[in-house]
Amino acid sequence: MKVLLINPKIDLPIDVRSSPSLALAYLAAMSEQRGDEVRVLDMEVEDTPLGQVVTQHMPEVIGITANTIQIAGAWRVARELKQITHATVVLGGPHPTFLPAESVERPEIDIVVRGEGELSWVDLCAHLEKAESLEGVQGITYQRDGEVVNNPDRPVIPDVDSLPFPSHHLFKMDRYTSLQPTLDHIEGPSYPILSSRGCPYRCTYCSQILPRQWRARSPENVVEEWRWLVNDLDAKEIGVLDDSFNIDKDRVLAICDLIIAEGLNHVPWIMINGIRANLVDEELLGRMREAGCIRTAFGVESGNQRILDTVIDKHLTLDQVRAAFKAAKSVGMETIGFFIIGLPGETEETMEDTIRFACELDPIVANFSMATPFPGTEMYKQVLQNGRLLVNDWGDFAFFENKAQFESDDMPAELVERKWREAYRRFYLRPGRIARTLLRKRIWLELPRTVRIALKTVVGS
Image (cartoon, rainbow, N blue to C red; front, side, top):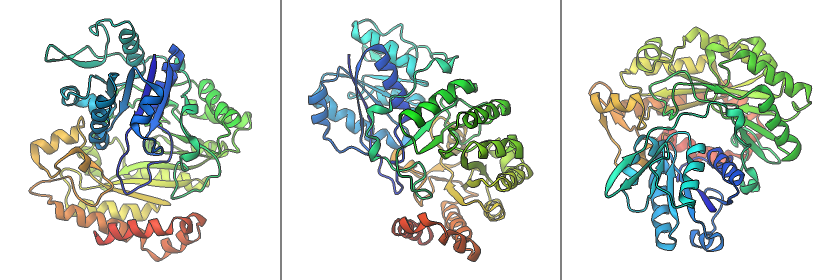
Protein backbone atom coordinates (compact mmCIF):
# COMPACT_ATOMS: atom_id res chain seq x y z
CA MET A 1 0.00 0.00 0.00
CA LYS A 2 0.93 3.62 -0.37
CA VAL A 3 0.91 5.37 3.00
CA LEU A 4 1.06 9.07 3.84
CA LEU A 5 1.75 10.15 7.45
CA ILE A 6 1.16 13.77 8.46
CA ASN A 7 2.17 15.95 11.39
CA PRO A 8 -0.05 19.08 11.29
CA LYS A 9 1.42 22.50 11.89
CA ILE A 10 0.91 24.18 15.27
CA ASP A 11 0.80 27.95 15.70
CA LEU A 12 2.82 28.53 18.88
CA PRO A 13 5.19 31.25 20.13
CA ILE A 14 7.96 28.67 20.56
CA ASP A 15 10.06 26.76 18.06
CA VAL A 16 8.52 23.33 17.53
CA ARG A 17 10.92 22.29 14.76
CA SER A 18 13.32 20.74 17.21
CA SER A 19 13.04 17.11 16.09
CA PRO A 20 10.94 14.73 13.99
CA SER A 21 7.84 13.12 15.42
CA LEU A 22 8.83 9.79 16.96
CA ALA A 23 5.19 8.66 16.82
CA LEU A 24 5.15 9.00 13.04
CA ALA A 25 8.69 7.66 12.71
CA TYR A 26 7.65 4.44 14.48
CA LEU A 27 4.47 4.11 12.40
CA ALA A 28 6.51 4.65 9.27
CA ALA A 29 8.96 1.94 10.32
CA MET A 30 6.11 -0.49 10.95
CA SER A 31 4.62 0.31 7.54
CA GLU A 32 7.94 -0.11 5.79
CA GLN A 33 8.43 -3.41 7.60
CA ARG A 34 5.04 -4.41 6.17
CA GLY A 35 6.26 -3.54 2.68
CA ASP A 36 4.33 -0.29 2.27
CA GLU A 37 5.58 2.70 0.30
CA VAL A 38 5.66 5.52 2.85
CA ARG A 39 5.78 9.31 2.59
CA VAL A 40 5.97 11.54 5.69
CA LEU A 41 4.81 15.17 5.61
CA ASP A 42 5.83 17.17 8.65
CA MET A 43 4.03 20.45 8.10
CA GLU A 44 6.17 22.16 10.76
CA VAL A 45 9.23 22.02 8.52
CA GLU A 46 7.84 21.37 5.04
CA ASP A 47 5.65 23.75 3.05
CA THR A 48 4.96 21.50 0.06
CA PRO A 49 1.27 21.95 -0.81
CA LEU A 50 -0.87 19.06 0.41
CA GLY A 51 -2.41 18.59 -3.01
CA GLN A 52 1.02 18.25 -4.57
CA VAL A 53 2.06 15.60 -2.05
CA VAL A 54 -1.13 13.62 -2.67
CA THR A 55 -0.77 13.88 -6.45
CA GLN A 56 2.85 12.74 -6.35
CA HIS A 57 2.41 9.91 -3.84
CA MET A 58 -1.22 8.81 -4.46
CA PRO A 59 -1.73 7.38 -0.94
CA GLU A 60 -4.34 4.76 -0.19
CA VAL A 61 -4.33 5.38 3.55
CA ILE A 62 -3.37 8.56 5.39
CA GLY A 63 -2.47 8.77 9.07
CA ILE A 64 -2.56 12.08 10.96
CA THR A 65 -1.27 12.56 14.51
CA ALA A 66 -2.74 15.12 16.89
CA ASN A 67 -2.50 16.27 20.47
CA THR A 68 -5.08 18.67 21.89
CA ILE A 69 -3.63 21.87 20.47
CA GLN A 70 -3.12 20.18 17.08
CA ILE A 71 -6.58 18.72 16.74
CA ALA A 72 -8.23 21.62 14.90
CA GLY A 73 -5.31 21.69 12.47
CA ALA A 74 -5.64 17.95 11.96
CA TRP A 75 -9.32 18.33 11.12
CA ARG A 76 -8.51 21.10 8.62
CA VAL A 77 -5.91 18.90 6.93
CA ALA A 78 -8.37 16.01 6.82
CA ARG A 79 -11.06 18.21 5.23
CA GLU A 80 -8.64 19.28 2.54
CA LEU A 81 -7.65 15.68 1.95
CA LYS A 82 -11.25 14.60 1.48
CA GLN A 83 -11.57 17.13 -1.33
CA ILE A 84 -8.62 15.75 -3.29
CA THR A 85 -8.41 12.02 -2.52
CA HIS A 86 -10.52 8.96 -1.73
CA ALA A 87 -7.85 7.60 0.62
CA THR A 88 -8.90 6.42 4.07
CA VAL A 89 -8.10 9.11 6.66
CA VAL A 90 -7.00 7.81 10.05
CA LEU A 91 -6.44 10.00 13.11
CA GLY A 92 -4.34 9.08 16.16
CA GLY A 93 -2.59 10.66 19.11
CA PRO A 94 -3.45 11.75 22.65
CA HIS A 95 -6.49 13.91 21.92
CA PRO A 96 -8.47 11.49 19.72
CA THR A 97 -7.53 8.68 22.10
CA PHE A 98 -9.44 10.40 24.91
CA LEU A 99 -12.25 11.79 22.72
CA PRO A 100 -12.52 9.39 19.77
CA ALA A 101 -16.21 10.04 19.00
CA GLU A 102 -15.59 13.79 18.67
CA SER A 103 -13.34 13.13 15.67
CA VAL A 104 -14.89 10.08 14.09
CA GLU A 105 -18.30 11.77 13.94
CA ARG A 106 -16.76 14.34 11.59
CA PRO A 107 -17.14 13.49 7.88
CA GLU A 108 -13.46 14.07 7.19
CA ILE A 109 -12.27 11.39 9.64
CA ASP A 110 -12.83 7.73 8.78
CA ILE A 111 -11.12 5.96 11.67
CA VAL A 112 -9.50 6.86 15.01
CA VAL A 113 -6.66 4.77 16.42
CA ARG A 114 -6.63 4.90 20.21
CA GLY A 115 -3.61 4.55 22.49
CA GLU A 116 -0.35 2.94 21.43
CA GLY A 117 -0.65 2.89 17.69
CA GLU A 118 1.91 0.61 16.05
CA LEU A 119 0.15 -2.76 16.18
CA SER A 120 -3.29 -1.28 15.59
CA TRP A 121 -1.94 0.59 12.58
CA VAL A 122 -0.42 -2.52 11.00
CA ASP A 123 -3.57 -4.55 11.69
CA LEU A 124 -5.78 -1.79 10.31
CA CYS A 125 -3.72 -1.41 7.13
CA ALA A 126 -3.90 -5.16 6.53
CA HIS A 127 -7.69 -5.10 6.84
CA LEU A 128 -8.02 -2.05 4.59
CA GLU A 129 -5.75 -3.60 1.98
CA LYS A 130 -7.95 -6.69 1.82
CA ALA A 131 -11.19 -4.70 2.15
CA GLU A 132 -12.07 -6.74 5.24
CA SER A 133 -14.44 -5.80 8.05
CA LEU A 134 -12.95 -3.66 10.80
CA GLU A 135 -14.69 -5.58 13.57
CA GLY A 136 -11.60 -7.55 14.51
CA VAL A 137 -9.18 -4.61 14.68
CA GLN A 138 -8.49 -3.79 18.32
CA GLY A 139 -7.94 -0.23 19.47
CA ILE A 140 -9.91 1.65 16.80
CA THR A 141 -13.09 3.73 16.65
CA TYR A 142 -15.18 4.23 13.51
CA GLN A 143 -18.76 4.66 12.33
CA ARG A 144 -20.98 1.83 11.14
CA ASP A 145 -24.47 2.59 9.88
CA GLY A 146 -24.32 6.02 11.47
CA GLU A 147 -23.34 4.69 14.90
CA VAL A 148 -19.96 5.15 16.59
CA VAL A 149 -18.24 1.82 17.19
CA ASN A 150 -15.45 1.48 19.75
CA ASN A 151 -13.63 -1.79 19.20
CA PRO A 152 -12.00 -3.29 22.33
CA ASP A 153 -8.77 -1.68 23.50
CA ARG A 154 -5.57 -3.22 22.24
CA PRO A 155 -3.16 -4.48 24.92
CA VAL A 156 0.11 -2.58 25.02
CA ILE A 157 3.16 -4.03 23.30
CA PRO A 158 4.78 -6.23 25.96
CA ASP A 159 8.19 -6.54 24.29
CA VAL A 160 9.26 -3.07 23.18
CA ASP A 161 12.59 -4.50 21.99
CA SER A 162 10.60 -6.06 19.15
CA LEU A 163 9.84 -2.70 17.54
CA PRO A 164 11.91 -1.57 14.55
CA PHE A 165 14.00 1.55 14.88
CA PRO A 166 12.21 4.75 13.79
CA SER A 167 12.35 5.62 10.08
CA HIS A 168 14.25 8.90 10.37
CA HIS A 169 15.25 8.74 6.72
CA LEU A 170 11.72 9.75 5.72
CA PHE A 171 12.08 13.13 7.45
CA LYS A 172 13.90 16.18 6.13
CA MET A 173 16.41 16.16 8.97
CA ASP A 174 18.31 19.21 7.77
CA ARG A 175 15.26 21.37 8.49
CA TYR A 176 15.09 20.62 12.21
CA THR A 177 16.84 22.66 14.88
CA SER A 178 18.66 21.19 17.85
CA LEU A 179 16.54 19.57 20.54
CA GLN A 180 16.76 22.55 22.91
CA PRO A 181 17.52 25.41 20.51
CA THR A 182 17.40 28.16 23.14
CA LEU A 183 20.29 26.50 25.00
CA ASP A 184 22.41 24.80 22.37
CA HIS A 185 23.51 25.37 18.81
CA ILE A 186 24.30 21.97 17.33
CA GLU A 187 26.02 21.71 13.97
CA GLY A 188 24.48 18.55 12.59
CA PRO A 189 21.42 16.40 13.16
CA SER A 190 19.75 15.98 16.55
CA TYR A 191 17.78 12.78 17.11
CA PRO A 192 15.26 11.75 19.76
CA ILE A 193 15.27 8.30 21.32
CA LEU A 194 12.74 6.48 23.48
CA SER A 195 14.20 3.86 25.81
CA SER A 196 11.00 3.02 27.68
CA ARG A 197 7.27 3.51 27.43
CA GLY A 198 4.62 4.33 29.97
CA CYS A 199 4.84 5.52 33.55
CA PRO A 200 3.91 3.85 36.86
CA TYR A 201 2.82 7.21 38.28
CA ARG A 202 -0.38 9.08 37.52
CA CYS A 203 0.08 12.78 38.19
CA THR A 204 -3.27 14.52 37.85
CA TYR A 205 -2.09 16.94 35.14
CA CYS A 206 -0.53 14.31 32.87
CA SER A 207 -2.31 13.21 29.70
CA GLN A 208 -0.66 9.79 29.64
CA ILE A 209 -2.52 7.69 27.05
CA LEU A 210 -0.98 4.36 28.08
CA PRO A 211 -1.91 2.11 31.01
CA ARG A 212 -0.02 2.51 34.29
CA GLN A 213 2.56 0.06 33.07
CA TRP A 214 6.21 0.89 32.56
CA ARG A 215 7.88 -1.12 29.79
CA ALA A 216 11.60 -0.76 29.28
CA ARG A 217 13.82 -1.68 26.37
CA SER A 218 16.89 -3.70 27.28
CA PRO A 219 20.18 -1.79 27.63
CA GLU A 220 21.58 -3.72 24.65
CA ASN A 221 18.64 -2.77 22.43
CA VAL A 222 18.81 0.88 23.47
CA VAL A 223 22.53 1.14 22.79
CA GLU A 224 22.16 -0.66 19.48
CA GLU A 225 19.91 2.21 18.37
CA TRP A 226 22.27 4.72 20.00
CA ARG A 227 25.17 3.28 18.00
CA TRP A 228 23.09 3.46 14.81
CA LEU A 229 22.21 7.11 15.46
CA VAL A 230 25.84 8.07 16.08
CA ASN A 231 27.74 5.91 13.60
CA ASP A 232 25.25 5.60 10.73
CA LEU A 233 23.12 8.75 10.98
CA ASP A 234 25.93 11.01 12.25
CA ALA A 235 23.96 12.27 15.27
CA LYS A 236 25.53 15.30 16.93
CA GLU A 237 23.03 15.32 19.78
CA ILE A 238 20.58 12.81 21.24
CA GLY A 239 17.53 13.59 23.34
CA VAL A 240 15.92 10.96 25.55
CA LEU A 241 12.13 11.38 25.50
CA ASP A 242 11.11 8.87 28.16
CA ASP A 243 8.45 9.85 30.66
CA SER A 244 10.16 7.68 33.28
CA PHE A 245 13.73 6.94 32.22
CA ASN A 246 15.14 6.14 35.66
CA ILE A 247 12.56 3.81 37.19
CA ASP A 248 15.18 1.04 37.14
CA LYS A 249 18.55 2.41 38.30
CA ASP A 250 20.50 -0.70 37.27
CA ARG A 251 19.13 -0.45 33.73
CA VAL A 252 20.25 3.18 33.45
CA LEU A 253 23.71 2.31 34.77
CA ALA A 254 23.96 -0.55 32.26
CA ILE A 255 22.98 1.76 29.39
CA CYS A 256 25.59 4.29 30.47
CA ASP A 257 28.29 1.62 30.84
CA LEU A 258 27.62 0.36 27.30
CA ILE A 259 27.70 3.89 25.88
CA ILE A 260 31.04 4.48 27.59
CA ALA A 261 32.47 1.09 26.60
CA GLU A 262 31.59 1.64 22.93
CA GLY A 263 33.04 5.16 22.88
CA LEU A 264 29.70 6.78 22.08
CA ASN A 265 29.91 9.26 24.92
CA HIS A 266 31.53 11.94 22.77
CA VAL A 267 28.05 12.80 21.49
CA PRO A 268 26.16 14.91 24.05
CA TRP A 269 22.72 13.83 25.16
CA ILE A 270 19.97 15.43 27.20
CA MET A 271 16.87 14.36 29.11
CA ILE A 272 14.06 16.21 27.34
CA ASN A 273 11.16 15.31 29.64
CA GLY A 274 13.25 14.90 32.75
CA ILE A 275 13.79 12.15 35.28
CA ARG A 276 12.23 11.29 38.63
CA ALA A 277 13.88 13.40 41.34
CA ASN A 278 13.08 10.82 44.02
CA LEU A 279 15.00 8.11 42.17
CA VAL A 280 18.39 9.74 41.62
CA ASP A 281 21.66 9.93 43.48
CA GLU A 282 25.21 11.03 42.69
CA GLU A 283 26.18 7.57 41.44
CA LEU A 284 23.41 7.53 38.84
CA LEU A 285 23.86 11.11 37.70
CA GLY A 286 27.64 10.79 37.74
CA ARG A 287 27.49 7.77 35.43
CA MET A 288 25.05 9.56 33.13
CA ARG A 289 27.41 12.53 32.99
CA GLU A 290 30.36 10.27 32.20
CA ALA A 291 28.29 8.71 29.41
CA GLY A 292 27.77 12.12 27.83
CA CYS A 293 24.58 13.45 29.43
CA ILE A 294 25.04 17.19 29.77
CA ARG A 295 21.59 18.24 30.98
CA THR A 296 18.57 16.82 32.74
CA ALA A 297 15.18 18.17 33.69
CA PHE A 298 13.17 17.50 36.82
CA GLY A 299 9.40 17.78 37.05
CA VAL A 300 9.17 19.77 40.28
CA GLU A 301 5.73 21.26 39.57
CA SER A 302 5.15 22.88 42.98
CA GLY A 303 7.15 24.26 45.89
CA ASN A 304 4.36 23.42 48.32
CA GLN A 305 4.27 19.94 49.82
CA ARG A 306 0.49 19.95 50.30
CA ILE A 307 -0.04 20.64 46.60
CA LEU A 308 2.40 17.88 45.65
CA ASP A 309 0.65 15.38 47.92
CA THR A 310 -3.05 16.15 47.71
CA VAL A 311 -3.55 17.98 44.41
CA ILE A 312 -1.25 16.34 41.87
CA ASP A 313 -0.35 13.06 43.61
CA LYS A 314 3.33 13.53 42.71
CA HIS A 315 4.86 11.00 45.16
CA LEU A 316 7.72 13.42 45.73
CA THR A 317 9.03 15.53 48.60
CA LEU A 318 10.67 18.93 48.46
CA ASP A 319 13.76 17.54 50.18
CA GLN A 320 14.08 14.86 47.49
CA VAL A 321 13.96 17.61 44.86
CA ARG A 322 16.64 19.60 46.69
CA ALA A 323 18.85 16.53 46.88
CA ALA A 324 18.38 15.78 43.18
CA PHE A 325 19.38 19.27 42.07
CA LYS A 326 22.35 19.25 44.42
CA ALA A 327 23.51 15.86 43.09
CA ALA A 328 23.17 16.98 39.47
CA LYS A 329 25.18 20.13 40.05
CA SER A 330 27.84 18.21 41.98
CA VAL A 331 28.57 16.00 38.94
CA GLY A 332 28.62 18.94 36.52
CA MET A 333 25.24 18.39 34.91
CA GLU A 334 23.03 21.30 33.90
CA THR A 335 19.48 21.28 35.22
CA ILE A 336 16.04 22.37 34.01
CA GLY A 337 13.10 22.70 36.35
CA PHE A 338 9.47 22.33 35.30
CA PHE A 339 7.02 24.27 37.48
CA ILE A 340 3.25 24.75 37.32
CA ILE A 341 1.39 27.84 38.46
CA GLY A 342 -2.34 27.78 39.22
CA LEU A 343 -3.04 24.13 39.98
CA PRO A 344 -6.55 23.38 41.29
CA GLY A 345 -6.78 24.27 44.96
CA GLU A 346 -3.85 26.67 44.88
CA THR A 347 -3.70 29.95 46.73
CA GLU A 348 -1.47 32.97 46.28
CA GLU A 349 0.66 31.58 49.12
CA THR A 350 1.22 28.18 47.47
CA MET A 351 2.11 29.83 44.16
CA GLU A 352 4.52 32.05 46.08
CA ASP A 353 6.08 28.89 47.54
CA THR A 354 6.72 27.61 44.00
CA ILE A 355 8.40 30.83 42.89
CA ARG A 356 10.66 30.90 45.94
CA PHE A 357 11.50 27.20 45.52
CA ALA A 358 12.47 27.71 41.88
CA CYS A 359 14.81 30.53 42.87
CA GLU A 360 16.30 28.36 45.61
CA LEU A 361 16.95 25.45 43.22
CA ASP A 362 18.33 27.84 40.58
CA PRO A 363 18.28 25.57 37.50
CA ILE A 364 19.79 26.85 34.27
CA VAL A 365 16.20 27.01 32.95
CA ALA A 366 12.99 27.35 34.93
CA ASN A 367 9.94 26.55 32.82
CA PHE A 368 6.80 27.96 34.42
CA SER A 369 3.53 26.88 32.84
CA MET A 370 0.01 27.72 33.87
CA ALA A 371 -1.91 24.61 34.85
CA THR A 372 -3.62 23.17 31.78
CA PRO A 373 -6.45 20.64 32.21
CA PHE A 374 -6.00 18.51 29.12
CA PRO A 375 -8.80 16.07 28.23
CA GLY A 376 -8.26 12.64 29.74
CA THR A 377 -6.49 13.96 32.84
CA GLU A 378 -7.76 13.90 36.40
CA MET A 379 -7.26 17.66 36.46
CA TYR A 380 -9.75 18.03 33.60
CA LYS A 381 -12.36 16.25 35.71
CA GLN A 382 -11.51 18.39 38.74
CA VAL A 383 -11.95 21.60 36.77
CA LEU A 384 -15.28 20.52 35.28
CA GLN A 385 -16.54 19.67 38.77
CA ASN A 386 -15.14 22.57 40.79
CA GLY A 387 -14.11 25.31 38.38
CA ARG A 388 -14.81 26.99 35.07
CA LEU A 389 -13.04 26.45 31.76
CA LEU A 390 -12.14 29.76 30.12
CA VAL A 391 -11.20 28.44 26.68
CA ASN A 392 -13.40 28.36 23.60
CA ASP A 393 -11.60 25.78 21.51
CA TRP A 394 -8.86 23.19 21.84
CA GLY A 395 -6.22 25.48 20.34
CA ASP A 396 -6.53 27.66 23.42
CA PHE A 397 -5.04 24.84 25.52
CA ALA A 398 -1.53 25.90 24.49
CA PHE A 399 0.14 26.42 27.86
CA PHE A 400 2.83 28.65 26.33
CA GLU A 401 0.41 31.57 26.12
CA ASN A 402 -0.15 34.08 28.90
CA LYS A 403 -3.80 33.29 29.63
CA ALA A 404 -5.21 30.97 32.27
CA GLN A 405 -7.37 28.18 30.86
CA PHE A 406 -9.62 27.87 33.91
CA GLU A 407 -10.47 29.48 37.21
CA SER A 408 -12.47 28.87 40.38
CA ASP A 409 -14.12 31.10 42.97
CA ASP A 410 -11.04 30.81 45.19
CA MET A 411 -8.50 31.12 42.38
CA PRO A 412 -9.43 33.73 39.75
CA ALA A 413 -7.65 33.76 36.41
CA GLU A 414 -6.21 37.22 37.11
CA LEU A 415 -4.33 35.88 40.14
CA VAL A 416 -2.86 32.93 38.22
CA GLU A 417 -1.76 35.10 35.29
CA ARG A 418 -0.20 37.66 37.62
CA LYS A 419 1.75 35.06 39.59
CA TRP A 420 2.88 33.37 36.36
CA ARG A 421 4.34 36.61 35.01
CA GLU A 422 5.82 37.30 38.42
CA ALA A 423 7.48 33.87 38.45
CA TYR A 424 9.37 34.55 35.23
CA ARG A 425 10.26 38.07 36.25
CA ARG A 426 11.55 37.15 39.69
CA PHE A 427 13.48 34.09 38.50
CA TYR A 428 15.18 35.52 35.42
CA LEU A 429 15.76 39.13 36.50
CA ARG A 430 17.92 38.34 39.51
CA PRO A 431 21.29 40.11 39.06
CA GLY A 432 23.35 36.94 39.49
CA ARG A 433 21.07 35.08 37.11
CA ILE A 434 21.43 37.75 34.43
CA ALA A 435 25.22 37.68 34.71
CA ARG A 436 25.39 33.88 34.32
CA THR A 437 22.95 33.93 31.41
CA LEU A 438 24.96 36.50 29.47
CA LEU A 439 28.01 34.25 29.65
CA ARG A 440 26.26 31.62 27.51
CA LYS A 441 27.09 32.00 23.82
CA ARG A 442 23.67 30.77 22.75
CA ILE A 443 21.87 33.65 24.45
CA TRP A 444 23.27 36.08 21.86
CA LEU A 445 22.10 33.98 18.95
CA GLU A 446 18.59 33.82 20.39
CA LEU A 447 18.47 37.36 21.77
CA PRO A 448 15.82 38.88 19.43
CA ARG A 449 13.43 35.98 19.99
CA THR A 450 14.16 35.93 23.73
CA VAL A 451 13.33 39.63 24.04
CA ARG A 452 10.01 39.19 22.20
CA ILE A 453 8.94 36.30 24.45
CA ALA A 454 10.14 38.09 27.58
CA LEU A 455 8.11 41.19 26.78
CA LYS A 456 5.02 39.11 26.14
CA THR A 457 5.53 37.18 29.37
CA VAL A 458 6.44 39.99 31.73
CA VAL A 459 4.30 42.75 30.28
CA GLY A 460 1.49 40.54 29.10
CA SER A 461 1.23 42.33 25.75
